[in-house]
Image (cartoon, rainbow, N blue to C red; front, side, top):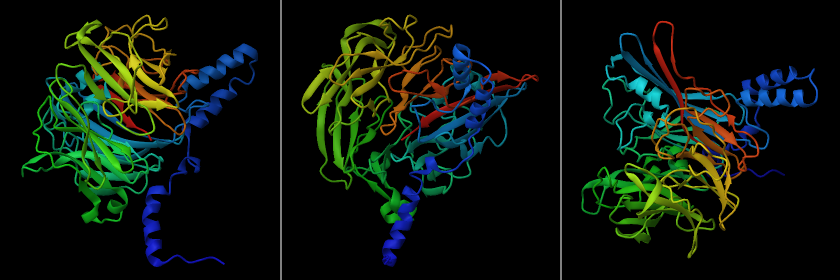
Length: 517
């Protein structure tokens, strides 16, 4: 005999169903253009045999935006930006946020467009197109705003995404910022349905490279930075928590919680509070101070705002330790250690000292790299790292025998030390080199802020301005590959980069930034 749930329980389950109802949506029926194209291409190889057939099928795979066997994805969310300048130097910007489940066709969630083209004598579109970096469409304290999609996170189970839409930050060109249908923090299911506004947008620009917000392991809470009242009674940057089930049930009194009460004023070099992450479902880590000098401190606070404690502190005069994903827990912690007194072999202006990757497990600290270079860093960017099994991914320009052009590549190493392997094998595109793996054009490469790995599938995702497959000559694309690099990466996006039409109109289309579970 079936039992009937109490009415209150049914209401709660209905609300939670919005969160978990699409957890297995990757298996749901959907239209997949890439699958159809891959099958059609494969049929052209039918009459071939042996090596010729294998080469034909390999070329089909390289041209496909489907994921490769052994490297599936669950949910991928990313921004597509198209900046256009006509022959009269009038520019406009169109942006859209899209979600993709597995090999299903991407679904557009929200679009924004410049109401009226504006005179652009400085050539904003051309500059971004030349740099080929999608991150330049995101507003940070280091650059003026262009776009309106400011932050993004995909829930750990892949069931949906949360994103921040705001046009309030100072624009690089007045009038160019596109007009969204609404501003705020939004939730959307992985299949593109169920779009819902959760509340007002964050009023804080994300530090460079921290486009992704943090989600708790159970996917019920989102940690981010917004303005709030500190202990001294003034407004400053604070760590906030978004209770997703409460927000989806429109319980505004329980939807957002301010976790910190600090009164530290933010500056260009010191954001005050930055990079909130979940150590586990009950504890949030965050950082105060500047990573460029002075005192830099890691903190931990309960999700109910209690038991705030200092995890560790680094003062000026010692090697600067920059934690990059958590300070406790069962998984090893990747940290970036700066050595200001040791000149780097690849010194650049403002980047003249060595940086190395260390692993921390409890009280044990282990150095993983010894390249004496200025751009080595854990993948995932500030606040995060990329861990697949017992191997840590990091970016570097070192040549261990397979990187003669010293392009920024993905490497992996055992968290116990040793066994360093080069995972990607990107080719030089002939442009002058960039500042290594730092977020700086014009050379091609991978940047630490644009890497991720799905801990369930093991698939590694990264964005790159290189052209490893011959289908990305002018753009910034998202790729997926096996964590061991045993097969070439698959290009998941097909933005056309910078092109010029017959009438002289300049088009710049870039894919990214992105987020995945």
